[in-house]
Image 1: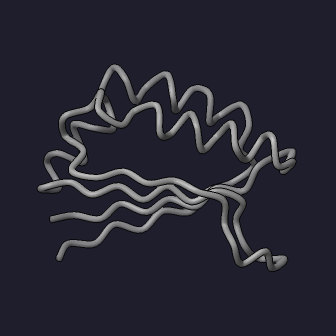
Image 2: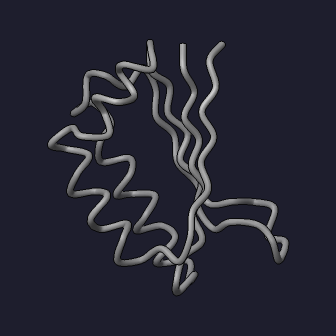
Length: 95
């Protein structure tokens, strides 16, 4: 299994914008069969260095993760992300 975690810092981090991004991520649930599990939520740490929204996905393999990155449902979500996110940081690990 592969866990793919991405943390996002929004350009305008209002609660409404945070929730809109969470909703956008969760809209992929059930539409991308490569996803074993997907969760997204607002970062609870709230420190100066923290990110605003966290996306947490699980895949069966690195190959599935690569296919997800170019999936036709994922691509429009990433276009939305580009318009609202200042920066992001991702971590992938196998277990």
